[in-house]
Length: 374
Image (tube, rainbow, N blue to C red; front, top):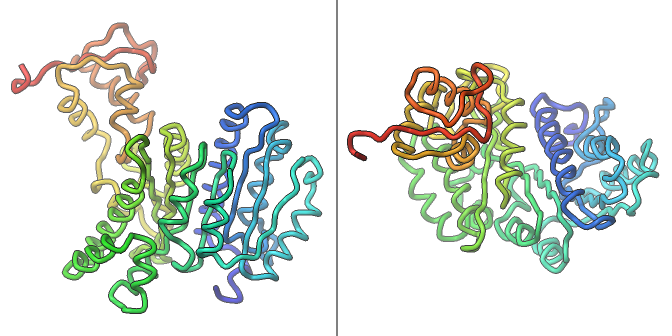
């Protein structure tokens, strides 16, 4: 990390911190009512930095605290754990947090760690009986980010992970012998070996698709047969808007968490196509939709639903929960498309929608059979 990194935030840094703090607020609101009264929930930031840029702009730790202060219960339940290998950063953060307005309402003592993220901290996480926790991992490069770290954490109930994946660093080092150890830690040994062979002949655009897809598959396959993992990436482009620098990646075992984060990322997207979010932050261009099976505008969604659910009757909420995973579509897209299918007499319903261009969660839509399904 360069010495001037915390001079002032970039637009990307602000967007990233906004996504994390907004998700924390909604996650904590769910978890405070999930655990028994008085039981803790936690937020852990493994690369916390000093908490504030030199120009006075708050970074993620203080934004998370600000969100927690908006609720009466959360400060009484929240355990805050901050780590940074830079001792001056963690000391500055501790000084700032402990003198921060409203911090006296937080009932649990804050923890400030000075670990270099690696095996030691993985052991710390694996050996602890964590309460529901949101883990944020924002390394400068790729060191400290590993499947073992993520997997050891996700074993616990109510635990979600958000991490910053430095695609640019991975891409630049993907064929360099000195990068093999880090690629193995991120993708797993077998997958990293296959990845090196797969990307060799690919164009830059194709290479990004393959790398991010392999990362998502590695995160999913690490789960047990009893649980499903939801993975959602958000792309950041370099200034100029042509090449990707990072992805902010979210991993959860619960559809509700996936749904919440998807709505947040949709609002932070810099581009939309027919109301479908791009899931990227790029001030220079509207961009292309590359990480979700290429661009899929809203008029495509109706045809997909007609084919997938031909001959079936489902509520709107069932259609949404079954179909939306690993697509760019959010809940309002499904409501609008189902209304359009109803209004054009392509589907029937058990009752008439009350308003134009929307569709209640419990309305049952019946899709006609196709000629091949009759």
